[in-house]
Length: 258
Ligand SMILES: C[S@@+](CC[C@H](N)C(=O)[O-])C[C@H]1O[C@@H](n2cnc3c(N)ncnc32)[C@H](O)[C@@H]1O
Image (tube, rainbow, N blue to C red; front, side, top):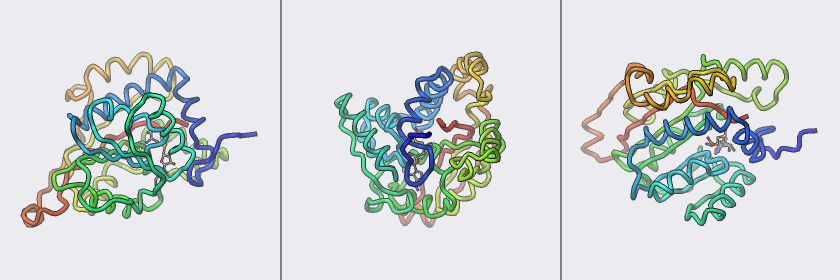
């Protein structure tokens, strides 16, 4: 019997699944790689107000806080938020976690310098309201970093197979292409800085062991981390208005831990 507590109605996705993933070798390698790539995209966060949307058990929020950001994390799952709070308490970190949904963020407009949303959109059927909310709470010039499972990546393919085999979790999976994510961001008034592929190896421990050092070493270089036709959009009228013209950095092919 599966004893994992569900996250916001998502079956079999809870803090225990995350702890299990991180305890595995492929999980710890991939987590380290993913965090390094996300933090690289986020840039210097010292003194920045950061919101981690779909924060899960708070691992990234904690990394951001240790780098000097003032961090808030929200998640629709009370169990995840509980685990995130426990992590912050264990490390004596001052991070505000709360239960909330990405479609209805409980913050007033233009409060955050940076928003991160890592492998949450793959559980959101209609992402339009999520992008709209993120654009609303970002300050002008603020930045969004998204990590998603690329629609055609090996990781998404494996999950599609699991869905066909009856996984209730992955029957809810919704994988998007970089183009779809770009379109959603642009529709919300966000200017796209770039889209990166990141984790190329399939979900095999030996592949992770072999390839992750190279990916880490060359992260940010055009050698390995492809810049998939970055698209810049600027709308002078909106810039003059000082309204929500922000930057979106989208990182593709991130993993999901279950
Ligand atoms: C795959 S986990 C990723 C957690 C974390 N971002 C990470 O990378 O470790 C997806 C998380 O998104 C949360 N989530 C899913 N849909 C959500 C929504 N509509 N609003 C807020 N959180 C949501 C789930 O509860 C879960 O904790």
